[in-house]
Length: 395
Image (cartoon, rainbow, N blue to C red; front, side, top):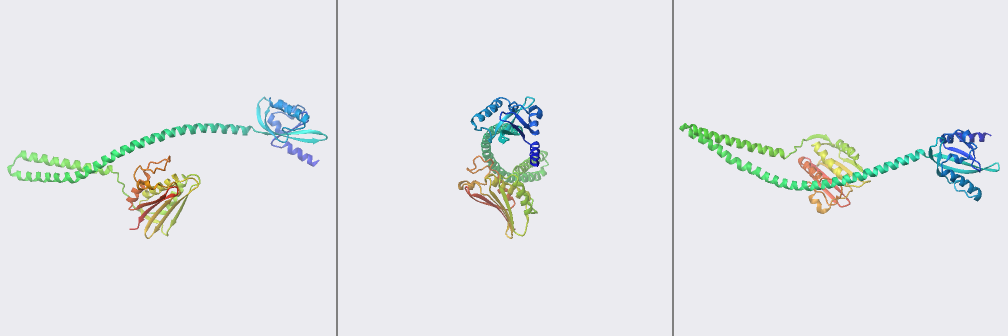
């Protein structure tokens, strides 16, 4: 008696719907969960054929399953389960998974149907399909846009390269002119200025206003030309864009840890930046901003030219000899024939393929390193990785 009460309580409180029918398909019992799914009361369904809870063709197929089983004794859905469609009282339908089991009770066969609502699952699957289709459209659209951008960048790079070559030639011509102006123009101008002053003094005894007037014009012209020359030389210095390093004392380890944390956020999947410092000291006297830029560039290259699931070694060392910064990766490496051009502006190794980049980073690193009185070295083997070392000797 106690077991029967427990079983009834379990059925009444089950999350899934449970319906029992006889061998003719007539509903004998239905639990509250099934009533909620179909929106019927027990009185409205008990005594009716279970097929009325299904729309065609599931309704016809269900009756056929029962007739076939009664004649052949071969089950087609019992113990297997399948997806069917349920028909609510208001005429709406919903998908559910039906599992049927057979029980022999008091000399007759009773079939128990376990109903698991699939509405939310199907809705999620539909949303997923919509998202996937939308994502495919976006990917196709972005891919096309990216191809156009890459093509435009290649064309722009070619144009920039040609412009830079012309600009380089003009720059060299301008530098030669500036050098000539500095050495050749100043000497005759000084001589003209001196001669004009002597003429003015020797002509004083003639007391000639015309001589004084014209000597004054000569002096003014020389002064104007000297001013123009000085302005031109000053403009040349400004256009050179010289960066003057600002040396200060700072904690190298703290800076390196901040850079490691920041760059780890942009690393590829399962790429790990391993930082280690050697030496008891942690303070250096360098330009912190320039050094940070150098390290950022080198680690960014290590991330870009290395694959997923790799390690990037970032080491600093302070000793009596000076300060050393090393960034080492296990990436694609640099072909031996390209290594001599590595620090040239806009140069990229021929094995970079479609990996994006401008070819300016290493040129900037080399220049910044030189401004801080340091040197940069590297070792690289194709498909085995690259190691960059920045050296600052203690003065």
